[in-house]
Image: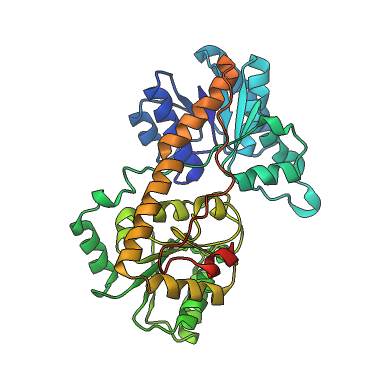
Length: 402
């Protein structure tokens, strides 16, 4: 099996590629990945896969044509049975190569892909619909494909992204790891902690959380914004200025990238996703639940598919600081029994529906349709089942937000 992507740096596309390569090797296949390289090549090779360095990051039309020829030679030389493309530029090269070599072609839609002014990029984006099977990472993305591109609906397969439940497992996070983070971040014992993980960029909604914190009017709460500004110093400064203006500067702590997110979730009382633009999947929502934490997320994008409203967290209108403050108040006011009920429901939900194993098994099933004429698996539920709220968790406000 050959997977192609621009490069192997940190990100959801790259993580999915490495996870699938490891699953293929475990299933007895030879896994080959072609990309421009990056720090995750070593991880890929440790999994037993082969990496071939090609300039697949380029968007130059002539270079894309050259890559197509190179990939055709690679497919024939290595005896590749199926090609899986995960990004647009390399997908063009891979499509042409797969068609020339006569092997099945699969794509994964990892995002909505901007159409550009007057829709000029739609033709470029459409390559992601040209697979013999098209994998959407959520029902939200599948709906976007149907609404934006003309393609055979029977070829779309929803395979939610999966998280490593061995890493995101509360039983595997030691007290020492949590103490180390609390010391580094100067978190006082007993102070409630609210965390929004995500790079510092406007659409991730850090300003919405700051506004909600000001409306909450609880001076004991600490708010962690965990993520790199990636050079967006102006936005970082604007968040600091907003926190100062709203009187919560001493409660808001901006933390650069964390090297132990599992421990970060464990020192947190409430996990928040506040994205103002819809998330194609939203790993934070899944990871927070996997660690047994109540999660508050915006009621758009894929979040309604991942969160069990009223059982594991709350959905609120995107960009609505007042609704977010109300959900925070409810989450922080839960008694110990309610928190335990939420934790058990959240952990069970993610382990059943959003594990890495589930993702790789469903992807292998897509390959099996094309290679061995196997029947498709039943699609995952369109929405997570809404259950009656645990005491203090959800209720009318949560369902209204959905």
